[in-house]
Image (cartoon, rainbow over all chains, first blue to last red; front, side, top):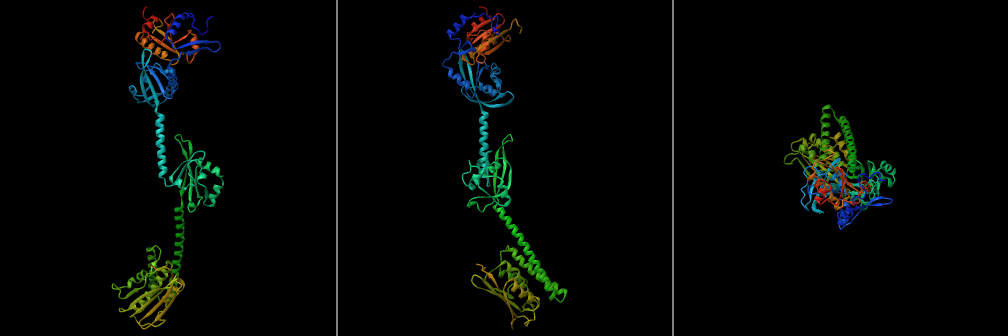
Length: 486
Length: 94
């Protein structure tokens, strides 16, 4: 009885002789044998080329054999993978139909580049190498196709890696890249400087032991154990916690800790980027600004208090509104002059000589014959500038109204000396000559009272006024600390 | 192509053995030269499915079976002897 799948028209063993003869003559290289249980099995009649055939079957490159007319006779498994087509679809096609655009020029042992068409996908860059081979009596072409997309991708990755490294090397902030597991894979130059140990390979918390900068940050950090802060930094956005790094080198510095996700081409998170921004200078600037605002507030209040005091005192000592207006505006001007000088010197302090010259500038002649200023260089403390300016203004006003500057021949000599060791004090003598003859008490108006009060209370000094035959002489002394200019 | 003058050929091969490859190449060359537009070739790889050998009682590989026109004809070998193939397929009288 014939086998159900056997062609009934084929006589059994009709060609047995021919088969045996073909095997003997070497016309075949495989035979089919029947196993009792397993059914038919193909037995290859191995020759010396068998190892090479296995090599081609298993090689990671695509390979094909084409006849002299370019028709594909054989493809290996890898080429089927690369093209996305089974062997049956490829065998019998023309070699040129595998490629997008112009087929590669097949010169023996020369590698060319081409784009291999793929079933349902974009064409792939391949390197194509070929060599003629003899198969029996036929001359065929052996073609090897190497997937260049892997190389191209590797080149792109290498370029991206070089770019990322370059960015990290140039960054002035401490930046590290964390893997999803919380281990550091990349670190900027600054991060390596700050880390307690070489950071790459460590967890973030091991390389950068943190201490919170304030109570809020402390509470935030305390919510996470050391282990979980590495996980959180690696997996979630994390912004704005001020921290300090443990260790002596970093004790004075404050950092802002932030983390953001690192995503791949498919927008899938593959880790995170953590930055430690050095806030030290910014914190200092903020503190300085806060201090400056407080200082400005304090000074404005002081000035308003001075203005209020000067206004009420001037009002009491002025006989008329006109007198009040003259005196008050003069005193405000003295106040403004002192502030101008302080502003010019950035509130560091003013030389006594410069202050005297500024106040008396309107009365000085080009040859300085009416007003002479003599004394060693000394830097006044900032707090002394406004009071002393007011005192000098009052002396000058008195001299202009009643003293040496009220006559054409009068003159004033202002001189001072510095005495003392570490706690230096200045003794300044204001000597008028050539003015009208005055007597003690003649000018004991608000001007004199103001001088006494300011020297005593604001400068913590002493005042003495003498009226001799030459003219009035003020002797004032006040401490200036150790501020003698070089 | 009509059933009467068409050649329906089935070539049994064993994967990519040299003689299998040579048989495929030789058969295609002969058909293009002597039977242009009048043939169909089906290549059966017995390495993938040895059971298919039973239908035509294949023992040696490569083996070419002429299914049409009848009667069935069998040629064993890599088909490198063109004259033998032409005679075996009744394309050229003996």
